[in-house]
Length: 517
Ligand code: MV4
Image (tube, rainbow, N blue to C red; front, side, top):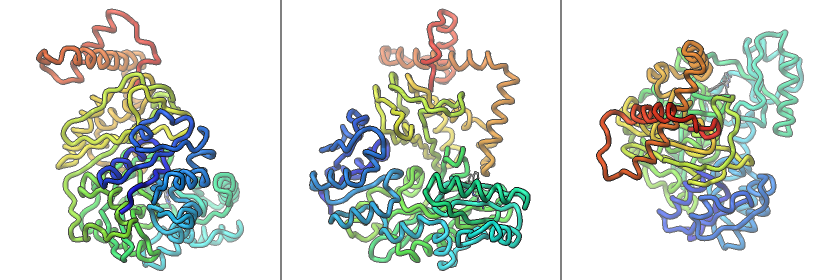
């Protein structure tokens, strides 16, 4: 086993990896940019190396700086987390060539999956169904026209070097094809430095369901079931759950077997995720892409299977056999995760950097909060503003959502705006509760929200929001001071609403800036 691992990341995922290192008796080494010197992940490590100024390109994306940090600290392995260099094959290769272990798959598997067209060819080889379309980039507009007619409109043009929906264009008819083709190419060129695009048939109202796979270096490959990730906003996942409310055991087994087959085909090692689109009515599934990293939403799989994915990544990278067989994987209960961002849901999810001046973190039965911040942390404009992932487990989906709702109400963040109020509304939404979760969910939810607000009148809503937040702050401060006294009856939300109304009536001291999350 390794005695020292360098973590080439920051924030909540660095903290998550540090915890797995500690469980295994491994000393974690942090890297940080000048903007992150005081951050949580640095404080939790035994050693920390400054790798450059705040901009990612000069710090968390600098391969030479990270390799130098690993060498100067005598680290034996590097965990890349997600984002930054996690899916950079050149980085994986450089780590290996420097005599260190890269905690992840081999560079070859990363390269195959990095190109969406070669990933589709690998899926064909593995006999995994792909979305109907081309497996090579389009060479010309004429070729685009031929294939669009072959597969039938509407079609989707996607960047070969892309993924996650960037550089994607839907084309409804021949009349739109030329402009769609040209704009997809130029967006691909500027986003990925590669203008190549390919074509897929459009799957109407799909669900996004992905399979967690795991492989060791001795040829054992298993799957850990699916995650439902259909609730997305601008191709960013918002809420994820395990299991998928539409997946039964048969579909899980079929999709799981397909994902395992694909992983085998590319000699995959470590944790990976195979994404599928699932058609609404037919439940046919189609390979979309494979992510060759630990994913943001891995906690929901951990909560339901009880398997520690990061621990397993580390032991497998050290050459150990997987600690479980496929038959030992059991799925118990249901987990739902919210990505809590420092963004303003009342202002088009605009980033809300700044200092966290108040923090009340939820705990209690079934709650897990993977966080990278603490009181007085600065949320920087330089990085992804994810502040924590709040997940709830319950024996049923209903119980998980009940606990998530309670935890969201308990969770208080002051000084910055967060997406917490948005989630508090989602967990109370009837469509969400009844699991009508196709890819149009967020648009429909936002429409319902606006309709409700218009009906209630904006001013009343604002007063209500202010009252709730003022009340929450007041209530939790009072509660701390008066912990010896018996709490009043009634649910917490109602009590702090009452506090809020009282304090609002008494004085209008709350500034707009202070009312958040
Ligand atoms: C699609 C699609 C329909 N047909 N591909 C791919 C990346 C993901 N972020 C969005 N992607 C889609 N690819 C074909 N051929 C619809 C989407 C899509 C989507 C998929 C899953 C969950 C939410 C989505 C929201 C918009 C579009």
